[in-house]
Image (cartoon, rainbow, N blue to C red):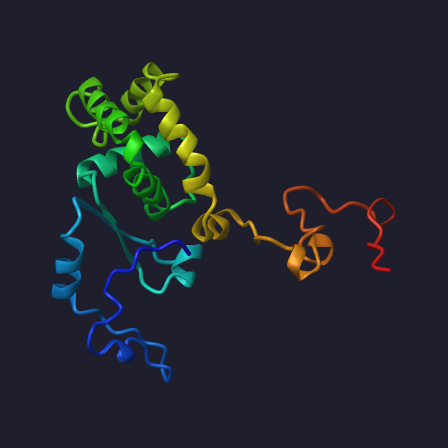
Length: 207
């Protein structure tokens, strides 16, 4: 999964981070974690819903991403805009946070991004993130075609969909060519239509 390390790798006691006997993972030393993160400009944090697909895969129910140039509020606004552009109930906030993280790393785009965030807040009465869904949609539609809109929408394609969290949430099994292809790994896993008759879907020829 694409993650940002929460604690520095050289922490004392790092060898005790997992217990192979019972699978429990003790809590990290939070004071050290905070000091490491506060080097950045903003922190995006959240939790993964218990019982979700990602909850079973993630090492911890808590996630955090550090922003170097954008503030926490600006990062949250980008997450909210990402949900307007590409709404997915199955995708947790942790995936949309990757959008903010990736844009935070694009130095040449930051002036446009920061100005665009400010314009969204202004168009929604001060806080795009807290605005009703209808007002968010109207504000985003109003800037369609602008450099800010195109920058965020273009980044969404890779940030939201090219990561293991999205693969797991959306049911994509990942690359298959190195495992022999899809012919025996999901080729006939059609779930949303009735199964075809045998004559219409014979077994694959494997040589």
